Length: 426
Image (cartoon, rainbow, N blue to C red; front, top):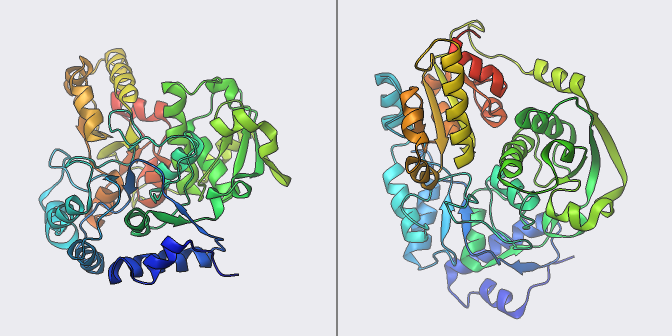
């Protein structure tokens, strides 16, 4: 069945607003038809968010497309934020790593950022994967239809905020903003938001967010889970602590699987409103207890050349840390350093957060205290940093399951990371 288009949409497809917009609309229509979309619906969020933020030299076709859009006046109908920058001079590197970054990888970064500004970048420093943080200001409302593609932001917007967005690919996100419409299928529909898995949490303590998300993502893959029992540990209010937990949990479900939406019984908006009516008939069940989490943890491969190597770098913040996380980790590191008789972290450590969040952090007493421990703060994308093949050869540790999945970084729980930073050993 062909997709229904309104007269306005059909006119754009037929060229009423120029050849370039007609091509953009045709691309979105073809995308929608491939997934069985029945119609195009308006994008209703105030701002958009783009996943492509890095100026890789090999992405020349992207730059050519962006130039075509700019030259034809087909700029975004929304201002937008974008994923984190791939480079930051504050992050420790050696000469060879710098040469690879400069000449073989992100040699088009300044040029591409200039294109993004012409297309509608919200502000010069609007680069983060956690655009929904209050300090950043790109937080959709419940029911908003989005044209996003960053997986960790999409799953957060769908699940915690109750917005509606499919897991789009890069470039399709800006196209949806340009024409103001996206195809109606999948997670934009009521049926597509039904849970096909019931996940029961039966752990004896609050499960590690990144580990629990990993377990669920690998089990349900691209399907929608309805999680029962997590409210015992998180409560029934979406306060800062719960939202921070779900940020990291959701990123792991999206990267270790392909989850674009989850429901947490008694906590997330649609679960509180609709309850178990969100569970589809014939839903499968997955029980997670302490032993299952340990099994998942033990299954992670160690792909360092020397699995007993001393870590040379620690990255925290993939996705970017919240303001409260920065404060909490400052206190934890200070306390553990004192307990272990050390003044500074024993492994070079980078905490990453949105530029706007870092500005807020710098206004607090915690900023100077964290700096005194030797920890570096940055707006960088750890994943893009680790994609440098020279960086990838380093023994890097992290508590991010997303970073573990996409790079050679080795995963440890938060407490294990804290021990390594403050007393050494791995």
